[in-house]
Image (cartoon, rainbow, N blue to C red; front, side):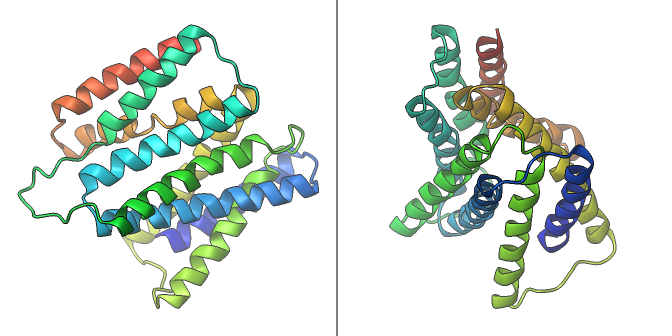
Length: 248
C-alpha cells in the first residue's frame, strides 16, 4: 500500500503547493528532503523493531522518544512554555506511553528486547522526532513546498527499498482503493501538522501531534470492536488533560 499511498500523497501535495504558492529556497528543499527521509526511515525502523522485539516495549518507548526529541530540541532553540504548559508536556508524554502500550495479552510468546531491537526502537523514535524538527525549521513563507519535497524523498526511498527487497508490486482491488484513501488522509494530516508546527512552539505542537495514538485506539474500538485496556483509558484521559493544559 505504501508504494501507492506515498506517491499519491506526493501528487496531491504538489498540486496544493502550486495552488498555495510560497517561496522555494535551498532551506525549503534540504529541510523538506531531510524531513521526508527521517519520517520514512523512522517508520521502517519502527516496523523492524516490532518484528525483532516485544511490541509492548517497542511501541511506548519509540513513542516517548518520538515526542521527546522535538521537546528537547525546542528547549535548546529557545522554547520557553509556561509552567502549566510544561506540566502538560510531561502529562502528554505519560499519556503517549500508556496509549501506545501493547501488552502481550494474546498468549503468544514474544522475544525479549535484544540490543538490535533496542537500537532500532531508539533510532525509529529519533528519526520520527527529527521529522518534526526539520519541518518546523523550514522557512515560514515556503507554503506547502517542504511537504512536497519530503514526500518526494520518501517516495524514492520506498521504491528503492521495495525494489531491493523484491516487493515492487502495487496492490489491486480493495487494497488499491484503500491505498488511495490513505494517500488522501496522509496529505491532510501532513498539512495540518505543518500548520501546527508553524503556528506554535515546536515543543508544544510536536507533543500534541504525538497524541495521535489516542485517535487510533478510538477508531479501533468504534470500527473494529477492539477491547480497550484500562491503561489506555487512563492514557486517553491524561491526553485530554494534557491538551487542556497546553492550549489554555
